[in-house]
Image 1 (cartoon, rainbow, N blue to C red):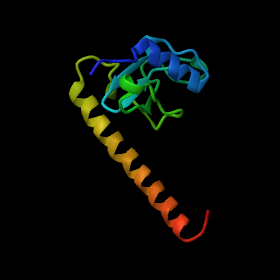
Image 2: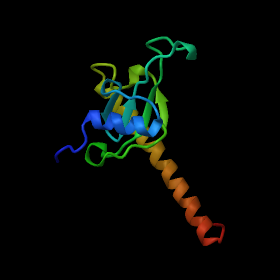
Image 3: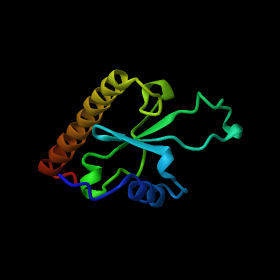
Length: 121
């Protein structure tokens, strides 16, 4: 499968969605997730290494360029692809994120379906 969207293009897409300048060095993709490391802003009270990494649902984003508009969750830098040599930890985190996100989607779909059949639109 040839990649249609490079990291640079994905950075532009994410930046347009969140209304900020996003640079390729600030994003990494692993599994179904795009991880975004915002520039550190001291006014938020985070130290350089403690700034949370935002996790965006981005299944097959290299293929079709679709990325969610809001982060699903935030994780520590140590659990993200921005820390080198921790592929096992990143794999565990992406599995947990997948499970939580898909459970949420199933719950929303079930509620929507029940509302439809009960006449509550």
